[in-house]
Structure formats: structure tokens, C-alpha cells
Image: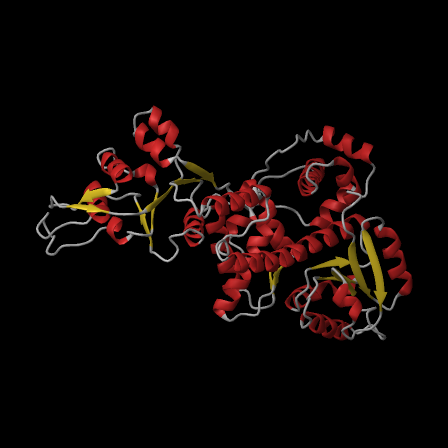
Length: 475
């Protein structure tokens, strides 16, 4: 868009002709500044992305000096992402380049469309890193939501609602798929509430026998059942003056639902094997991945209990519906596990970040964290690449017996590139055409030819081709 900030690019190259051509070719949305110095400079500190010509970055064309420049940039406070321009003779150095912390490599001279897209994605990754630091600072100041991150509009609305309801002692029902962070949200609400000094007791109702759940929630007296050799307080008593979080409340049996309803209505209960009434002062927060309203209609959940629980409902969207948060969350987990395992990993390569953004994440944020944890463990350098990610995120291998025609391959490359660019640009055609470096009319023709529909969801396990191949096919 016209008011979007420009991407500041620092060109490290002694080839003034190439640098000037690149600066002119990038066009609107970019601001390029050339420097032939390898020392750390103010220009690099202020830039968003560094474009380093591996051989022309120093007199004599020695790539070793280019590697030293990359190492110096990695020691900077800002650590901007580095895109390396390689001559054909240097393509074999790609693994070495990535180990020195490069975001990506491009053939020299670069394809303009490919260069624009790579710079934009590198800038987006850098923006995610900055946003992560900013959000962490805000969470530390607020003291409540620091465990949950998200820049998507739906998440920002959720954070605002949480801060609004936290001081009020109302029952909260959190819905969302498994792995979206429902317990984290419940803990954040507790920390921001007037009960923060009390305990937050968490208990999951999933896949447990009714008798065990009853004993865990209400406690029991000695001899109440076989094996009860001593009296025991339940979770309700433990949570007195604090918050009780019941996860997977939809799995609570019909036999126990009236007992929980009584606790909500009268704030009292009896232990198993006892007639003594115990009064408690608790706040209840429940969570479920199931549709309780449908369960009420099917007779699987009490209607009166549902309305007691559903005073304030908060829905955590699945990760596939807020893909703009994937780079932010991935970088957060990378930094956390890097510190935990004492590793030197700093960022993701472009193909790795593409794979994370395009995968469907059926296990949501929890699955993403596990994938990043695995990648940090396997990575020996500074940059996580595709090979470090779980195979499922890279997409299935195509059987050798399946042969596609050249035309089919070209069509698929074009389709994937357009879908990815349209989604990144919020389905704004003018901005997408500018990002691809094509006329808006030509973009419309491609969209019609490739039968692309707005908000189309791709196969979450589809393996994407490198941006260079796609860009060259569409150009």
C-alpha cells in the first residue's frame, strides 16, 4: 500500500554498476544504500536487510572476506537478515553460507521478482523479531499475558477481552482446538485477577473414569472406597480463594455434572464418604475443544450447567486461521529453546520459514513448538533449514513413478506463487501485482486462468518449490 514503510536495504558490494542496477530495479517500496566497506557501519545498523555480494563485497573477489563480513554482521546488536548473491561458481558454498547465518542465497545477477519477494520475506521475518521483543516488553509491563503471543487481530481482541474480564469474578468458558493454548490463557486471566495471590489449580477431565474424577475434584474420607487409606482434599478445596481450571469440561460425565452445578450455585459440596458440607470461594474457568451447545442438543451435556459455565466465552482460533503469527511464534520458540539447550541458533532459512507458514498445523501452537524444539536440537549452525524440520512439515515426497508434464509443473508453480503472494498481501490485487513485479491486468488474467478463489486454503502438507523457481516460471 502507498503508506506502507519502505524496506531499507544495505548493498555490500564494490561493483557499483550492479549495485546501482539493483537499486533502480527494486522500485517503489524499497530504499537501497550501497557500501563497499566490510566493517560494521551505521548504514548496516539502520537497515532492514543486508544484500551481500559474496565476491564483489571486497577487492580481489575473495569469498572468505564475505564470510568474515557475515560473521561481523551477526555480532551486531540489530543483526539484520543477510541475503547473499552468489556467482555460479559459488553455488557449492551454499551450506557454508547458511552456516554463517545467511537468510537466503540468490544467483548473481538476481531475478528482480525473486529478489523483491526474498527481500520482503526477510523484512517480514525481521519485523516478527522486533514485534516479538515489543510484545515481550508489553507483557512484562502488564504482568499478565506474557506467556501468550499473537499479533493477529483475533488475538489482539482476545487479549483486550481477557484484560477486561480478569478483575471481574465471572465464570469463563474457553473454547478452541487442542494445542491452541487454552490453559495459558486461563493462567493469564488468573494472574490479572484479584485472586492472583491465591492458587490456580488445574485439572483435566479427559479420558478419566467418573469415580476418579469425583475423588479428584471433591476429595474423600478415609475408607470411602477401596484403597482410600487416608483422607484427602480435592481440587475444589485446594483452589479455595483462588481459581479452578477444568480442562476438557465437555468430557465430564452426566453423573458428575449436577454435582458441579451445585458447587457453582451454592459454593459448597461434601467429600466422598462424608456428610460434612464444605464451603469454598473459587473462580471457575473451563475449557473444551468440543461444541457444548451441540452436546446440549444431543443430550450429552446439561443445559443448565452449560449456561452457568458460558457467562463469558473466549475462543482461541487455530493456528491455520492466524498464519501471520507463525513467524512470531516460531522465533519465540527458537529463542526459548536455544537458551534452554545452550545452542547458537539465531533464525530460520527462507525455505524453512515457508514450510512453517504453509503447513496446516493440526496440533496448533503446541505442534509448532515441538517442531521448533526438534529443529533447534538438530541444527549445528546458526540457521534452521528444511532438513531440521519434521518430515510432515516439508510435505510428502512425490513417487518417482508419477510423471507430470512440463505444462502441469509450470501451472502448479504459478498457482502456488500467486496464492502465497495474495495471502501475504491480504488479497489486495494492486499490492500483489507490485510484489510480483507484473501489471495488475496480467495478474487478473493469471488468477482467472489458474482458477484461484479468494481465501482459498491450500493443501497444508503441500511441499512448496523454492521461490526462485516459481518466480522465474511466472516472469
